[in-house]
Image (cartoon, rainbow, N blue to C red; front, side, top):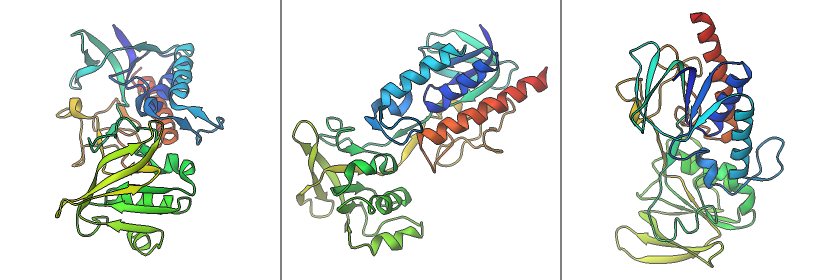
Length: 306
């Protein structure tokens, strides 16, 4: 099967791109990947999406999927295992071994938040365990929380949470946070934020409905301390889903696709949108916006080829 554009990934970036390509009356295939709907499928209430006062993450993605289909995009519940960017049209290999071809590609494979792998983490995921303080901070107003990590993301999220949370424990692996962001100094001077150095969270506990505490272990003495908190925020990084593009597209040292002019990758005709190329914002709304941009660029590229 040949399409004018194949979109790899079905989170906010991919589905928005599909909506725009469908409305432009171009043949578009969205390959949904291993987690159709992306990270929002594991999110509870979303309250920062314009036009929705509060909506469950999966419900928002279902609505976006339905809209993409209504606009004319096709969706395929498979994953891409390989692309050949040296040919025109591009060749995309699916996990059933079949190939599809496309005049243009939009890569929206997202990123995977790193997890601790500790006891209780999965049980209380979205029930006190989160990876996005910017998204979830309002749910923790007046509460005590833990942030795990000492890098730039951790101190930025600590500063953001300090405006709403009662107390913040910044748990990090080394003597000092490794963050280089100037906001680190402001965070370390904030009386609401208490550092717990050389430590990590080894267990999250709760009442079966929501997290109520975490067990922190000192990495030097192995002494464990139970801290009563309502939330545990993981700020230990994300892993962009770019493995299948290695050797095909330029990837930076952190694993993100390299783009210029917002969405253009190192190969003409291949565009990127969302967390696969965004190490800074990592918001559904920004991913959706760049998905629109990538679609418009792809449309212009296809029109130019004609």
